[in-house]
Image (tube, rainbow, N blue to C red; front, side, top):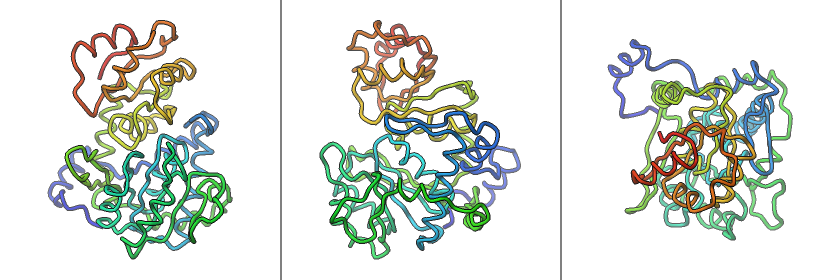
Length: 338
């Protein structure tokens, strides 16, 4: 599917100047798996995976999706909190040549019906139940909005009894080994980083229905590299997604930038100010992705009782950060606001 907002002339200019390259985001996961296989790549409260394990899981998921008949450029919606397998599903979609739309866990029927109908989605990745809300039930009701909608992949280790046909455990799917020679079939589904739509993102929908934004890989990779330079990000950093990785506040740091240098990402599934501070302390986080409200809530706590000495910068986005809050955050949390 051709991206519409870049002309051939623009693409040639950006390529010629070296801003856009042939790389994809998956390439960096493969590179890290080769160069630092036993280094931790990703963690949440339930799972911890190394770069080698992460690549294996990504490849398996991507291969199974292709094997199940999902075609290149089919759309897949990923709606989930900050979880390891949701994170891996997003990069697996790229590996499989599927156009991913990663959305916030709080969105419901109104937003999702619009997204499914507009994208003509073929599959979704979602929790079974999260915050007492039944996602499986919602997507079962919304299936009819897209004639292409075939699969629901749950972020559970087992499929609940009574689940509709074509409901699978993504975690189980990822445990089935795939011979290396079979993975070569995925190379033919590789996105052209210059011209192919590879992912969709969503606005928050605070003033109406969310808007969908198309992305080819090259410009996202270009801005991610710029972020790496601005933040002086290295493989020694430990990035922490306090905000959802589905959005810019959490995702720019963790999903887009961290893998470029082999930095580890830790995911906070459910925000509480105490939980965020404890996670930074426990994991020795060096940089965090937040929205301003997170900082306000964290600063209401007795911050000084936590060891936050590892923190060097705070990525704040998604809303207005008042100067006095920024000043207090830098003073009490110890990281520089970016």
